[in-house]
Length: 628
Ligand SMILES: Cc1ncc(C[n+]2csc(CCOP(=O)(O)OP(=O)(O)O)c2C)c(N)n1
Ligand SMILES: CC(=O)[C@@H](O)[C@H](O)COP(=O)(O)O
Ligand SMILES: [Mg+2]
Image (tube, helix red, strand yellow):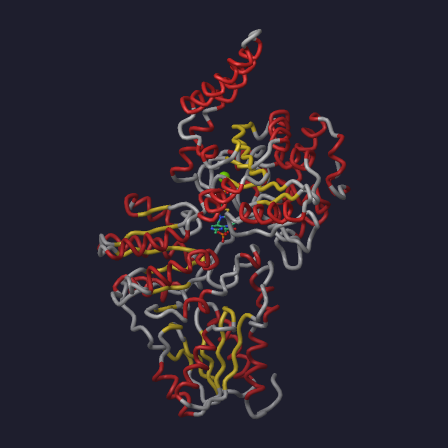
């Protein structure tokens, strides 16, 4: 079938299973081919082809609501809802979003990107339905990894209590990004093997019902027997205990089994959980055999061999992070590392190779990770909480209430700080300066390159005056020479990278090379601009700021972070509190959610370019001569 002719999923209603199987094969071929060029979340999507077909055949989207948890596995849903023609633009600037997007389609009823929100969204929709007296079905599709997220458990608890009809499809492929972890994962493991229970229950019922005369009475007795069988065969029917009708486990690649159970769920009152077993990467050998999570989300790859198309370059910040932490941990046994389900992305899997007892993957549990780090710190350990900037948002109160308020020695390694690119607005790491800077006791550092980064990590481990956050970007370093030994850096002491007498730029991290390019352009135009590496957002270098004000230099702050409440705001507040007048302009991320695209395209969009920096500075200075 030419998938690009699909307008909406209604054509599926009359499809036989054979036709669906053929369509599934077409979809797999399409995904494997398209994503070999664009990259994306190939593994998760190959695992939900039959499930998505069955859902769109049995339910009437968008009247019936399908909510995709995390949403990285919604490509098949997007193909079936008329967006196949856009797949060449997947996760590219102004192209197809990699997650559900309400402005893209009426079938995208719930936007995701961060994990574990679908059940709460579904409960809200089911509550609204019942208040309005309508009768649509609400179906949340959540993975076994996402189910480890605290929000999901909060929602299960409430849904089970309220007993409103909604369907939870648990897509269990035994993987988060890496292999899934936790006690819930073990429960699912028992349920996975409990297929026998379901069969035994049905056989038992059929036999009993066939007994003439007192068969019915016996059947009631058997109800209790059946329940005890349930408990015998399947330890702790966690979901039934939570108030759900548990159906499964279902073979998530067998359309008959899927449709039978989903149809039954549709007719069942109250909350229903359909436990579906799938294989992540199904239908593409390299992805199917992935045991570490390498095929969870990829860049471009060679279809035939499954070889990833590697972009050569300097070591990535996460690899510098892991290797430096190993170096420090060899000398300091207090060092332990915590990741909320991102051992691969953070490269803490490399740390765990050497220190398996000192690395903890806690599942998709950013709140727990933060407070567990606090607990570790109270006992004299040196916890390093490695977390993407965007996911740290999920553990904000724990940073406030448990780490900063108790002034505990936790090092928060904030990875993917700044614009991340293809994952778009749900993943840009641009808010953490604004939401951390206002917290008492916290120190916030930003390295300009991987060499400063390694020293900052060492400084962070040596630092014993409370919580310290070190922010670093997604991707590779600058290729700068790495010092052989680690040294402790002064905190709150900025350094002048380039002298200048007409104006000064205050910036840090990834914006340093961008500013350096602007200075080169300005020098050609006869301007002498000072460049200051403001590598600590908190504390500010107050002495240097006072000296700049005394020199009456026009100042420009630049940050790959939201302007509202960011670094530039901190500098403005400082001068205001000191009653000092300076001419100051701020450049940074404007007040809107920045969508997906390459980081360089996004820099252009938000104006973080050498040209815009030069123009902004020239607008602040007496006209010397037209810019070359
Ligand atoms: C709050 C939050 N933390 C971490 C992530 C990163 N993340 C994206 S997908 C994923 C694993 C999801 O596993 P699962 O729900 O089982 O889906 P699967 O990929 O197996 O289909 C993680 C940890 C996220 N999106 N949101
Ligand atoms: C869907 C999700 O949240 C993760 O898969 C995320 O896309 C990983 O980001 P990185 O590719 O930066 O590790
Ligand atoms: Mg999974």
